[in-house]
Image 1 (cartoon, rainbow, N blue to C red):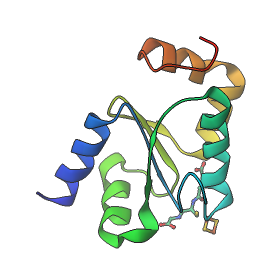
Image 2 (image 1 turned 90 degrees about the vertical axis):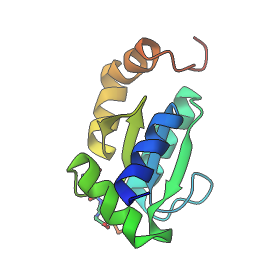
Image 3 (image 1 turned 90 degrees about the horizontal axis):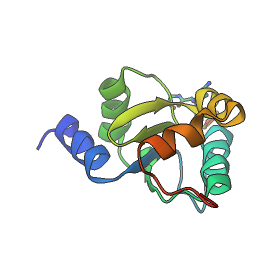
Length: 109
Ligand SMILES: N[C@@H](CCC(=O)N[C@@H](CS)C(=O)NCC(=O)O)C(=O)O
Ligand code: FES
């Protein structure tokens, strides 16, 4: 499998995926930590993938969504955004709407 095929498979096999620096338990960058906090706030289950562990994945994910930075949040196979977008969507109530539309269980919902 190519890196692009592996990325496609992981975002299609897992409802919510966060490509990040470090792990959900131990983020290695403030931008990644911020999205971890947002997801924690919503109580959403997700797969965290540490791009610092694999340079091919790190470059491959940037190519996959044509987005140059991490974190990158995917919901049901679709790229949602990085830290700024996710935070703005959360504040505007749009992230909760997206999770509900995509049948992602959210705390209290
Ligand atoms: N404004 C960005 C902040 C993220 C960012 O600037 N990430 C940088 C530093 S952690 C990055 O991933 N650079 C590319 C790399 O390290 O491969 C966002 O909204 O997500
Ligand atoms: S690792 Fe330095 S800003 Fe993210």
